[in-house]
Length: 224
Image (cartoon, rainbow, N blue to C red):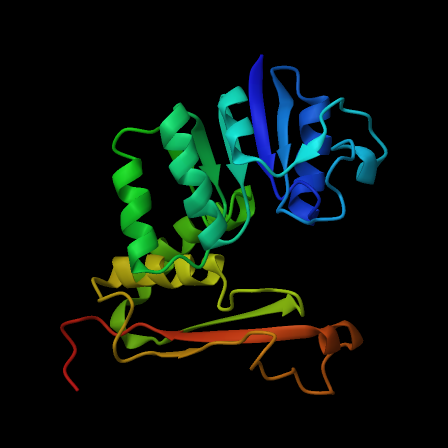
């Protein structure tokens, strides 16, 4: 049985992971973590989804030593702290966190040389199929077309453009042989602090969303 640790266990993704692990025949929740001071500390990890797991939510990262693998969908600074502990205890990692800066990406790449690590901005089958389809489309259309990626999020979305949107742009750039991130492209960054709300003519649910646009990608060979 694979012993799984989940950080951010009280969040939306954390709750979904608890439910999935409860039904998994070859994996079990072994460690449940939240940040210090979180109101869920001391509770059963499955309380929020109506399940009893027998695993109490804690904040001590040393507990990761009791897991085989950590699933991390948190924030860059948190993931890097977890990475340091996982390297100490040889705990494998599955990372869905996005928004890493260059230094964070270097740290992850260095860790991956010795620690089994899976990282993706989006784990859904549909999005990964889309990435492959974009590669095909970009190669077929060539540099005669501009590409614009537009996405919408709930108002609590932290990083926008999201890691998924950036990965889509990266796939287009790679197919065109372009520089990424593209120096001649425009990235409109949206966040709860500075985002532009969608127009009032949009569907009612969109009023609670932030939106972001990436315009890409001219091949590196195209002159100004």
